[in-house]
Image 1 (cartoon, rainbow, N blue to C red):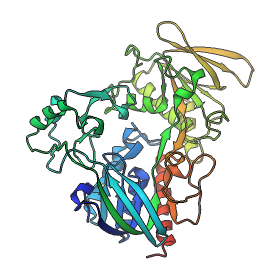
Image 2 (cartoon, one colour; image 1 turned 120 degrees about the vertical axis):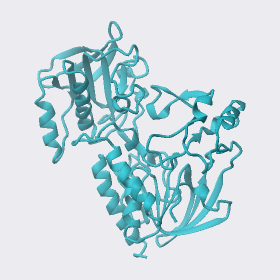
Image 3 (cartoon, rainbow, N blue to C red; image 1 turned 180 degrees about the horizontal axis):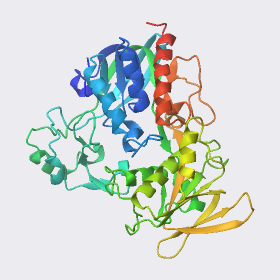
Image 4 (cartoon, rainbow, N blue to C red; image 1 turned 45 degrees about the horizontal axis):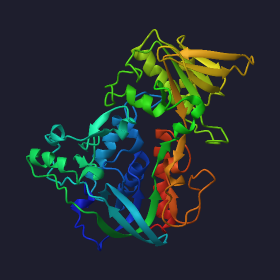
Length: 429
């Protein structure tokens, strides 16, 4: 029953499906939960809000501690999904309603139109014909893209998609005319599908904390203050600069860079909790800079370094690099210096000395916020004070970063257990 998109399922309102497991969220955790269940012989419906599977992992440059690209694991999972007829995939889809109980859930899935049908071969003829450019959300506004685009190089389904706010723009007719396969249908309508499932895994992932709230750290005011997720895109070959790390204001090479830990985290005015992976993510990004700019100075400001378990070896390796300088002290303020530089103001918590460090660019290590804090399951499901799903007996089983901040490997492990817990909550049906 594998479908690359729900539009391939007879899709008028009222159509009904059934499966052993519903997985909501098509990132690394959701894909893992779906595959573990399907490869154990269960039928699975996998629902993803975006136009392609992959989630946040797609926008990463490398994983730590091995520092390999995300396509390593992603391509393997996509191959497994394509080969498994027990997984039905809905993209551009959301859960509109849930009723019932564990073992007998009724679910309503609403799918938005893609405006591109299954005849699309991703030939790309439509893209240069498109006259509409928008800020690219995948690159956090660091670049532009067309209103019709391929989500990413390993997109699944491997088809173009039209931004819904531009589908009715008369200029989109140029794309229709340019398509040699009659694949663009700008009059597509939403569809609704009903499903009955025995278990539900909720794996809708996370988003970075809104750095515009950190007014003391000059994000949005000084162009050369960026966030850690933006830095990840700058370092990626699929990013806005094709992997060349350079500061946004003038594309200058990096001679001196600062990493600001706990930017909004462990702060009762923003995120009271530690996101657990930020220290390691910044150390990983420091290795990106070292690789491209061997003589660059790298300054990392921290409250305390958190590198649990086997990650301690990675920390020790980075700390031994003579070009990477660790400063114990939280940056309290960032101001603009000369020539586009920025100045980090921090107190050394060991000596009590106030220190100012001028750098070409500053990278804010913003924390992880679960998407369930603003978009929880549409059925009563307990959450903690921060919006993470709480372990409970409701039958909705959280997986990955909706449960707590996780790195990629930990999300995969958690999702494997979540699939089993969801099936057990359903009475092992």
